[in-house]
Amino acid sequence: MQDNKDEIFPVVTPEGTVTGCATRGECHSGSKLLHPVVHIHVFDRKGRLFLQKRPDWKDIQPGKWDTSVGGHVDYGEEIIDAAMREAREELGITEGELMPLGRYIFESDRERELINAFKLIVDDPDDVKPSAELDGGKFWSIAEINDSLGKGIFTPNFESEFRRLGFDR
Figure (cartoon, rainbow, N blue to C red):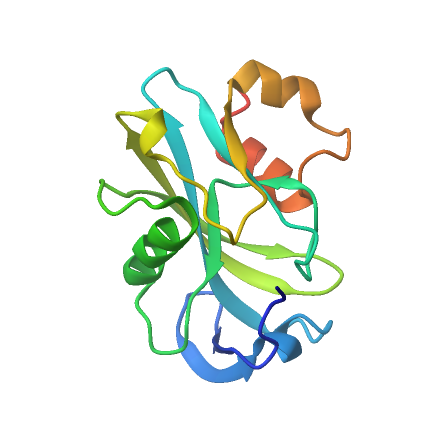
């Protein structure tokens, strides 16, 4: 498998207004074209956070542990629709209340993303079923995550967001 470099993403302002479009390849080429993504932090009732393992074929941060659900917004797609589509595609989650956590810009050496973050609580951890898009995943306690921060296990984006959203407390 590999990412589709011709997939079309919206290009947006920092406020989220669509100003045009570009391919995945263009957005991830170092152009810094701001494009929207969704992140969902999936917790169980015990307060554990599900993290996905990124497959080795991904073009960004292969093999690292990352946010429960993360994905790009398609051109013409609403943010909430993208979030539910990604939850379904990546973890088989088809229902639940998405609680908005905020919006911010994340920048790396290759890209600039407008992150739209959400929280979702699942009643039964067994309902979370990672798809073939991922290299599996598991629920982590907050203490386990805190103990592993800064050791190269997680994506820099996840570590930044984990702290930004106050999950590390």
